[in-house]
Image 1 (spheres, helix red, strand yellow):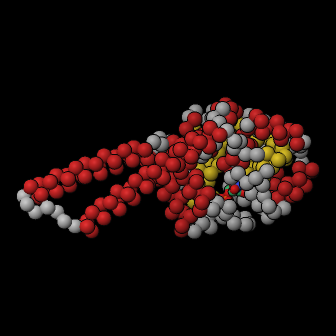
Image 2 (cartoon, rainbow, N blue to C red):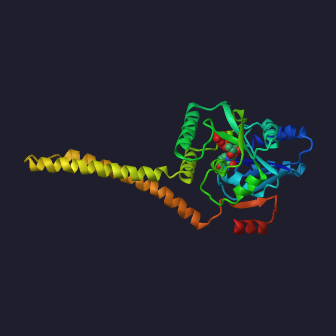
Image 3 (tube, rainbow, N blue to C red):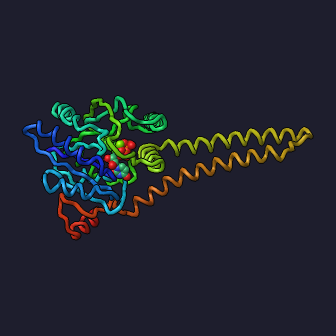
Length: 320
Ligand code: UDP
Ligand code: MG
């Protein structure tokens, strides 16, 4: 069986067209069973009703609804936890990732690859700011972490059951699903595709969500910020020592250094560095605290893959 996982948040105007495309692509793929898992990230529009209607007419369609908006990475993680396929494919629900890529991904899997990435070759309909920030993100991640990702970014992936199980055994919450899969290893390959403009609606990735992902990815896979702090500390201590010597020698020579302004600059500069470093330590500390607190990564309100009763929800919550 092939599981298609679709994180969905306020996508009412895309769902029917998406379902049509998925049905069209998969009906040609004779000999394969499918399940389409729509993970509704607590949409506030008509998304859950549309999904319910589609699910009534097609039992391949399954839905998981979150009780609160947890972000698309949590939605993908939930899809991977409950999917039943021998292989899972993740696609966005806004038709930016064309379902036509499914047979191409499977071709690579049939060659024996356990992870197949859909790498963006071109992106349609994105503004300069989005493209520049995305490029900077992947550039920094490739430089600062030990996980390498394609510089233009990969939004689609296929993973084999062995990788799904390995992923599900990684309970980390504040992380990037993509980087975790890249980090897991196994035999990985990629194919390229053109990322279309959104069929309808607007991007749900706010600047604060992007920043959160940036710090999650960095902190989860790199100790460079901590190294940087130690380095900055060593450099400022060294410079302070040199400056101290200059002051001392000048004082011995009978012309002590005067200057309130220069003192203020040094104090403010070092104070600023210290605040930034404390902020960075705070990012690590908060994540450690959040992980130890043991709250679930997502809260499920309804899951048609298991059961739709509230008992089931409680059971899942306890498990997670
Ligand atoms: N999404 C989600 N939860 C969120 C934000 C987005 O499930 O909080 C879904 C969204 O519906 C879409 C996918 O994640 O299917 C990618 O999001 P979006 O298209 O907004 O991001 P972009 O393509 O702009 O990076
Ligand atoms: Mg999108």
